[in-house]
Length: 61
Image 1: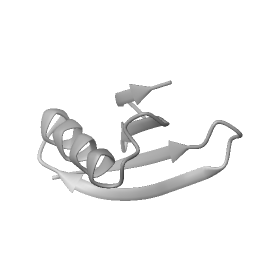
Image 2 (image 1 turned 135 degrees about the vertical axis):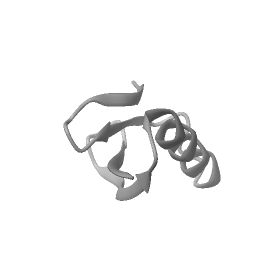
Image 3 (image 1 turned 60 degrees about the vertical axis):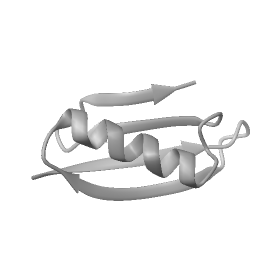
């Protein structure tokens, strides 16, 4: 299991969400991140998800 970090921003730069979670691999982390965004209605906001090494696996501008 690896650590992943999901961050969501408002257009003015305000951070709306900043949380970490564990996943078995990048695909599972992407799926979990997308689910979290949908649950919180943040799919249209700027967001990113990175793994512990800083590799971006999910991004929306």
